[in-house]
Image: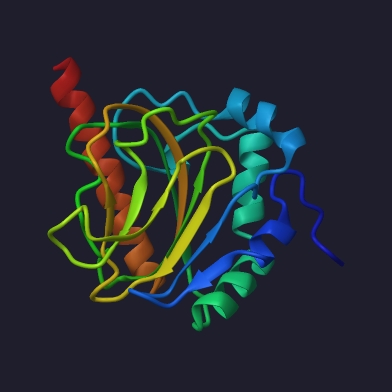
Length: 212
């Protein structure tokens, strides 16, 4: 029985543009159905700390909960598998959510070896500043200007990539609201559990330091 999508325009995901240089990645726009935009804006979790939060640590309801379930569906994994030339269908997944960015976020990195591939869906109404906070596909690990592509984090933008030793990416320093849902396929469930535990513990200590 075909999946009924209420938030994701699955055809936009299927039609995502795939690139092979400087590493395997795909880019799409308008992957959020127009009728879902208002609900996702309304139901996005009220996160008041910077950083990524495991989905289990935030409130999920309404349109936002539907989006997460659609992202975790088999069809998304099948499409991304085909475009990135890697089998992700049966790999364990982890979803994390960010609402607020700090100045230190976005530093150039490749992702850890525990990650196989990562998909980002952005949920910001507009992005006026063309110089900050836009994701960059980079050709090396030192220079933000050595970019192959730049992706605006407006609602409906999607970016996914296959982790490699040269999968450099990041964004220039931005402070403020930058809504994004990240889904990562990992090597094992143990890797998922370890990363979730680390993320939850980090946010716990942030709260202790803030209110202690």
